Length: 313
Image (cartoon, rainbow, N blue to C red; front, side):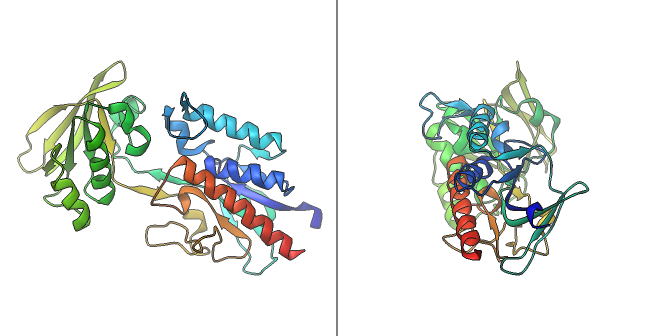
């Protein structure tokens, strides 16, 4: 039985998962990584990554994730294109954690959760059609491509206000579409929006369609939900900023989550409330949500797991 228990299982395959694998493999933990449904995570939906150190010319999201995977595999990480569908974690120090990929049971002494978070979209067909051609859910990732151009931001909370003020520094004009007649954002963020001259706020407006040529955005189709009047706004970029949903459903009831479903880790570490279970990347970080911070926390998780396993011996 003992030989079937893995030292370290990594759930998820974004920058945090693969970085955790690189560090865990180099520490001789013989990690096994389960990619989940979206190998490479959110970055595989990003066309250009220009802000990750070490790529002076930039790189596409999918290429970067392939590079990270190759690096993890060079140190003999076992990468399996399967999805973990269930978990039963031990509460004991040194206990064995159980995971399932379909009907297959996996036993592990340590688990690193790096399942990420999924950006929420409105559900319009046009969002998919123009993904990578002007529709984005991350201003800090993609805002640079809209220097001097006009963009739309959709949302009413802190995320939308933050994206709008960030984009206002780069772009010619930001139109912020708010579905209701008020913001949900904090007073400080609302003040920043209201004092930024090139942000126009349209309350009671919703995005209902996107128009363009050759898969590139040219116009946002909006409706005033009080008057039902439709109009178009000439723009090159549309940023959907209605929040993220952490991929933590299968861990509910076992791991401590915050009110939005993000895994709570001990400050300054990647430790969860369960011994031998660690969390890295966007699944526990709703503030920064960048590839570089996810990678950094993946390194931390592997080091925390290594320390935990060493103390067991």
